[in-house]
Length: 579
Ligand SMILES: Cc1cc2nc3c(=O)[nH]c(=O)nc-3n(C[C@H](O)[C@H](O)[C@H](O)COP(=O)(O)OP(=O)(O)OC[C@H]3O[C@@H](n4cnc5c(N)ncnc54)[C@H](O)[C@@H]3O)c2cc1C
Image (cartoon, rainbow, N blue to C red; front, top):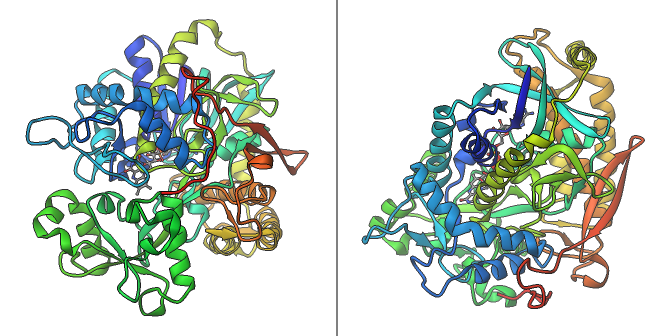
C-alpha cells in the first residue's frame, strides 16, 4: 500500500491533521488509520472545553495572559515558544472549527459561550455543553469523509519502519481479518493519544495504552518528560470516570468529612480554591484522604453542586449529572458526588519541535516522521497541563502538522522498501504471540502492572517506591516474554491478541515513566517526590529524555526554551507557583 501521508490515530489531532492536508491538496493520497473507529477515539469523551482568549466572557483576556497561565501552570517546564504558538493561534482555530460546522454553546447574543477553568485567570474555555470533544470530532470526521481521506478503521499499527535514517512507513494488521499490510508513505504522523491504562484508576478509554510511544521506543527514539502524569482531581469514586472540570468551573465545592471546603486551608490554593490547577487540587484531596478526612474516613471526598440549583445543573453540566445517576444512582441536584483523583493525561510523550517533527536522541528531526496531540511532547504543558489546553493543542498542532507535511511533501520521494521483510517480521511476531502457552493471562499481568504503578509511582513517589516499582516491572516484562498465555489462536477478530500487543505498550510506557521519575530528584508540577519536596531549578529546569539502548533504559536531558517567540526579552522567568 503506497500513500503520500499516513496518519496513525483518528482522534482530534490525527483528524485535524488529515483534514489540513486534504484541504491543502485533495489530490494527495492520505490514509488515516485507527485501531478504533475514528469517532470512538478518546477525544470524543472530552467534556469541559477548549481554551482560547476569544474575549467573549472576559474582554480583558488576551493570548499573552493565556500563555502566562499555561507556563505558570506547567511549573515553568513548558517550552515558551511552543506555548506562544498555541495561545496566539487559539482564537483563530476556534473560529475555524465553527466554520467547519462545530456547534459550540452560545451566549444570548449569539457569540460562542465561555466559562472559567482551573488555573486560567480569565474565563476562556469554549464548550459544547459538556460534550465538547464529541461536537468537534464528529464534525472533523464528517469533513474528512467529504474530502475523500481514506479511513483504515480498526487497523492496528505494529511497527514503525525506520531505516537508512528516515521513516518509510508502518506495518499494521486489520483486526477484522488479521491481514498484515506494509504501508509505505512519504510522511507518517503519529497521533495515537495517551496511556492512562498504565494505572488502575483512570478516566481514559480502553484504547489509551501508549501504542505510539511504544512504536517510537522500539525504533530507538526517545520519550520526553514521562514522569509527569496528570491525576484529574475528580474521578467519580469508585469507577474513576471523569467528572469534568467544567463542574468546578460552574462553581462546585470540594468538601471533606468535616464538611469543610478544604482547599481554603492550603496556602497555594486559598485564592483560587476549587479552581486551582489539577496537580495542586489532586494533591490536596490525597492529603485530606491520608489525614483521615476522606468521607467516613474512606478514600474519597465530596463534590457538591447542590447550591447551583436544578436549572443550572440541567443546562450547563447535564452529562456530569447523567454519570452520577448512571454509575451510582446519585442525582447531584439532591446529593453530593463521591470523587477522588483519577489518572487522566500524559504530559510527556514523543519529543517534537514546534514544526511537529519528531526528534531523535541527538535532538535532530527524523525525516518523514511527525507527531501531534497527546502522544507528542512539543511541550506546551510542561510538568502540568491546564484543563481545556489539550483539545487546543490537538487542534493547533494537529492542523500545523498537516500544513507542514503538505507543504514539504514535494521534498520527499516515495521511499524504497523491501516490504516482504517487514511483512514476515510482523507475521512472525503475531504467530509467536498466538503460540504463547505459558501460565499468565493478559488480564492478570495487566492488573499487576496497574497495581504496581498505582502503588509505586502515583501522586506521591520516592526513590524507594520507584526502585521497587522498576524491579517489579522488570519481572512483569520477563513474564510477558516467557510465560504469557493466550486462548484464542485465530487471527480473525482476535481481541485477545490486540490486548496482548497493548499490554506490551503498557509495559514500555510504565518503564519509561518510572525510570524518568527516579531520575528527577525534585518536586515539580504533577511529579511529587516525598524525598525531594522542593522544586530545584538549578538542576532540574530541564526536560527528561528516556530511551532504550542495547536493551537498557537510559536517561538524558535537554534544556527548556524559556523565550517566547516574539518577546524574547520579556520572557516569563520561573517563580514560586502560588494561586
Ligand atoms: C474523559 C476525558 C475528558 C477530557 N476532557 C477534556 C477537555 O474538556 N478539554 C481538553 O482540552 N482536554 C480534555 N481531555 C484530554 C483530551 O481529550 C485528550 O488529550 C485528547 O483528546 C487526545 O487526542 P488525540 O487526538 O491525541 O488522541 P485520541 O483522541 O486518544 O486518539 C488516539 C487515536 O489513536 C488510535 N490508535 C492508538 N493506538 C493505535 C494503534 N496501535 N494503531 C492504530 N491506531 C491507534 C486510536 O484508535 C485513536 O483513534 C479529556 C480526556 C478525557 C480522557
